[in-house]
Amino acid sequence: MNLSAIQTFLTVVRTGNLNRASEQLNVTQSTVTARLDSLEAVLGQPLLLRSRKGAVLTKAGFAFQRHAEAMLHNWDLARRMIDLPKGYSDRQSLACEVDLWVGFGDVWLAKMQQDHPDTALEAWPGTVEELRRWLVSGLVDAAVSQEPLSGRGFSSTVIAYSPIVLVSTAPPDREDWQTGYVHVDHGAEFRRWYVEAFPDHTVSGLSFGSASWALAHIVKYGGSAYLPLRMVPSLLENHAMFLVADAPIFSQGIYFSVRDEGVGKKSDILDGLAM
Image (cartoon, rainbow, N blue to C red; front, side, top):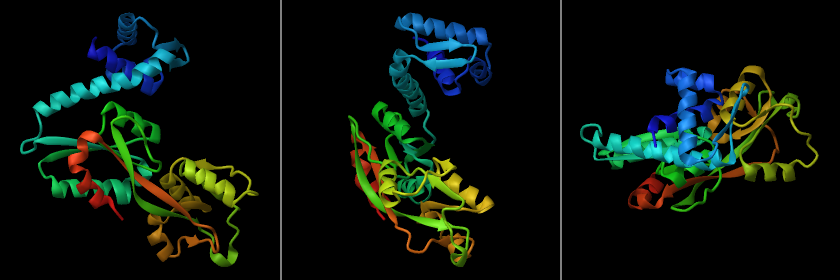
């Protein structure tokens, strides 16, 4: 099986389009098509439904995707392990939800640098589903997420509880937080809690899947949102943002997942992440 064909398949999946994939790979579209054809011929099944509008995964393509990622990762890891940076004897990878990097992912990185100076480190952003898939396939050694992850070969531990508070750019004496409210999806646990806490509150006309994006929006345009307290201390101190009085607070669990083969370093990492 040709590695370039696998790379081409994953690039098409990521871009959703053969033209954009050819541009990223710096090859012609006919080359992209030929590589996909050869890969599907070897596997004996269509991996993508291709049309002028783009390309989407078939059931077989979806099943093959994680194996393709693992194959490329293992090849890249084998190549890099042969040529580790001078003075390093190991390599560790962390995947982290974007909103959890500050205060958690960066702590892992600093702790590993301090306790394992001979280990080269990598950090990658991803969604919960990507983190789970990468752990299963071995693409990463550990992950930080807003939800507990489960799967063969790794386990999750809660490392902290992060307060999610309702903040607004309007001063308390002019408070009407539902005007300009921006909804932030902090994961399944938060969604359940929010419905119970605000059963009569209508769905917001503006929603974000990222707390940092929502924060940037309301700082620029005004409004209110449930945001991690760790993101807004300076804004609260400078009165650029205010806590909404008497608003319920959600305590969000932060989870650290690590592959079983990384258990030798697990206690060190968890000690560094505990808050």
